Image (tube, rainbow, N blue to C red; front, top):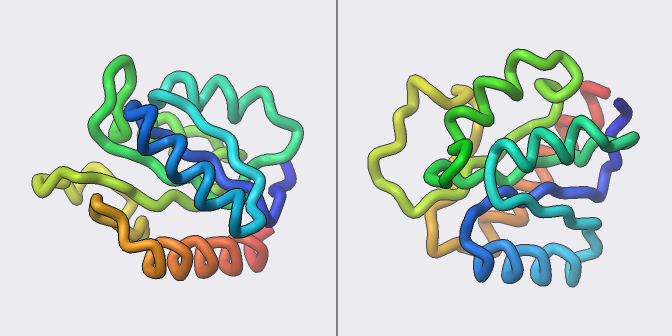
Length: 129
């Protein structure tokens, strides 16, 4: 599954957050896909011909939370190559359950920091691919 260097998957159960991030990223020239929970994100990713370059992942969601998604993401060699940035309003992030290299973007989101993180993850993903 090759990656598209300008595509981002936003995974968040809050429709307002998904729409705001989608608009913000689209205005910056990214192709944006979204999912309301981890299970939906996995189903979407496994059906794509081209993987996104970055996944923006909320941790606290119903059906399958971000931690469950990360477990499944890590088990799949194709998906595991897609870098993940955590977006969360929570202060009790269980660092033992997330990838140690995954940057954390606190909500409310600092847009400049978010774009800096996405750009860095896209660059590193392109070097790995």
